[in-house]
Length: 150
Image (cartoon, rainbow, N blue to C red; front, side):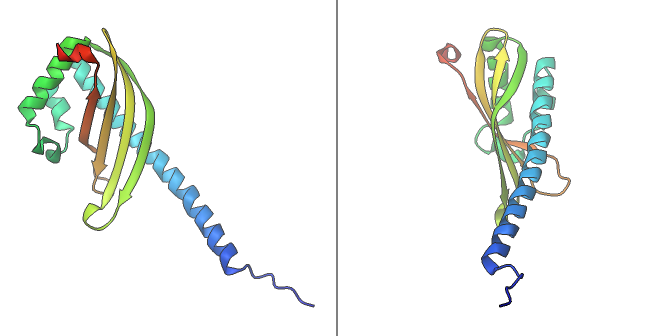
């Protein structure tokens, strides 16, 4: 009796799925690293007080609900309430790829950010349309405590 050495269709599919997942994982790590550079630059500029340069890192769509002036003012208030920036670390991250009208890559980085007076959690949603386009900040949430309300 001869046995077939040709893998079954299911085995081929599983093998391709495993290879695809492994390659996607490598790409996701690279996208995360690219996103971390954007966030590090954001905080370096923030620490130097270069608010105009900080705002240049945001996508135009970010300012659809909050104007540049309002966000600049908010960042200045955060600095007054929390003190100067000290450090940050990424606590969680996710990478999404879109197709069609949503074509591009989104990286979501949640960070624990230490300022002189307090530490807060900040989440950045970064987007790039593809290829060598730079990541821009599409969303930025600052989860402050009650001390932010004063």
